Image (cartoon, rainbow, N blue to C red; front, side, top):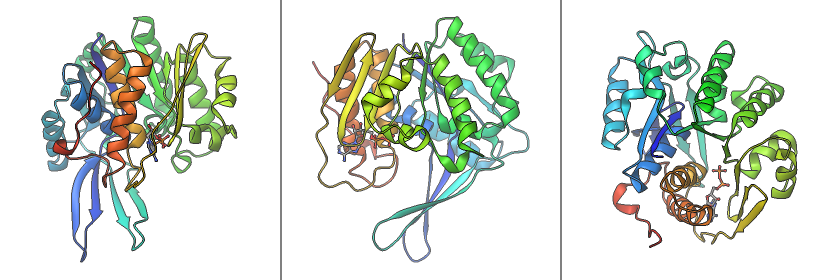
Length: 307
Ligand code: ADP
């Protein structure tokens, strides 16, 4: 097993530096996940399943995907839309706020723009990853086509992986999010939620309550993240509680969950055990939160892999 498709949106990022200057970059939960996966597991074939435009921002995004070693064969291009964007403002206390322009982004049209070649290239993926953000950006009328695609991949033996990554403001109502999430739980083989996702949407507070809630679905592997608290993994009848070493000086938690997911998936695709995979993923997330921004410079990101 070594080919994974990750469905979601990559956006143009602008962050305030000083004196009105803005630094440009790219980011988005699924893109961040793909980058960290590929950095730690270069032999895994990882590609974004997304849509960009024909503009200069899209061109530089595609170049950056290439530079990160991602496979661009699952990307389609819109004739008239461009990528979404966001601005990160940091106040004097270091608190970050985000402003988005993504309502009409190319990535939202990934299902409508799907090509025959893209569908063909999806046929042999071993793993398909998407998040609650990937679902939230799809126009409502495209959700059924998306779930049909996931169902088809699953019946062809592809492992389906979902991270609910709940963002209330992206959904018209919590009920719509629940409906899409529950369809995703039905299809998932591997679930990578954070405790926060369930707290906000289902008022469940602990790993145990989440485990009980998920018992009615037949999800083979569940990995529950909870910031610096222990990670709870459930595989069949076994439960593993894996301690996390808290980071003392957290700089920015952006991408903690994304880097964890990417490294966890790369590790599992490469045959590592659940415990080894969680430890490596936690090591990655611990580095990421000690830097500002979603993507840590390559030279600062080295992990010690188990022998
Ligand atoms: P999300 O970004 O999805 O909310 P979490 O905050 O649960 O994700 O964090 C994901 C992972 O990042 C955790 O399981 C843990 O491995 C790591 N992590 C997050 N916060 C800390 C912290 N303060 N110290 C050490 N590790 C952390």
